[in-house]
Image 1: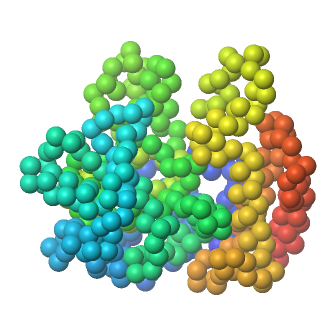
Image 2: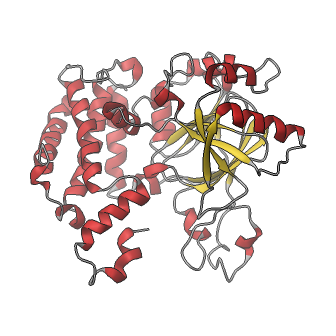
Image 3: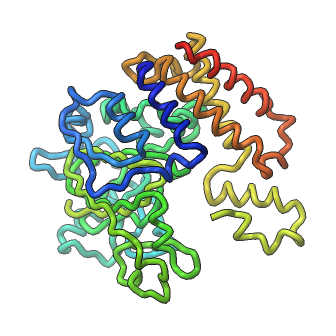
Length: 399
């Protein structure tokens, strides 16, 4: 990131005047297709898509050097089962049954990759049908369990990745997933974890994406407040069950070809098909007067449902803040926090990130539920970290 881009971004957020960035995006009737890597810079992506919070599709030219595109796919464009079996056949992978709804997701089982590939071959031979159902390999943490070297190269546009940077620092998890499945497999309607942005590369075959901009999902809620499992279901036309569906605009539809990369902005709900090859307290408020230590129970439920609670969220912000401060002081932290301007993690990116962390932390420390936590054991104390970040931002305005 250069200085001009940082100043542009800071002015953008000042102009939001307290509105959630993920809720502010221009109306769209199409998704832009980015053709050439050589003429599309980090600043182009940052200003044109990340800040406005709108999706885009990158052409296959952006991923043509990836090892997985060379080794995981046959010359005819089909999955190279032999290569996958030879290199990962004994790895146990998570597999979802797309034909069974479990809440708003699918039940999962675990099996060796070789067993899943055997199923896949039988599914194809059975004219895309199986008595075992429609099974989809989902959420395989290949890069956590194996080296990502030779599989993919992180695109510069997504190099400031707070979630994976946090988990890499803790060395316990990540949010890099592999999906594999035959025609008919799909992912139900959802928004990404923590309402983060994400990106997805299709190695072979074709995918259909259905995108709904932030806020549009509210028109899809049923009379009980629940979101649909499948936005293509005729049940959405039932005005008694879905009284708000009438004003809902049709989704943005994107067909993703082999090698192409889709940017999924923050807060955009979506549903994905393989073509070929609300508040915790509101839900449990009735127990408030009778449940001892009710607010702590809310934190437990929040973590169970969202994957994180206020205490962990503070530590998440703290780790990213410290690593960005190291960049500004020219010290290399664990995982080489300092980066060059070419990777997008130079001084300007660090300054911008610190400003965003400070704004988020400022909203956290005044939240009534956060104030109920015993923050005396936190190091540094949230107020002290916030002061350090705000002082850093003030001093960095001349950078």
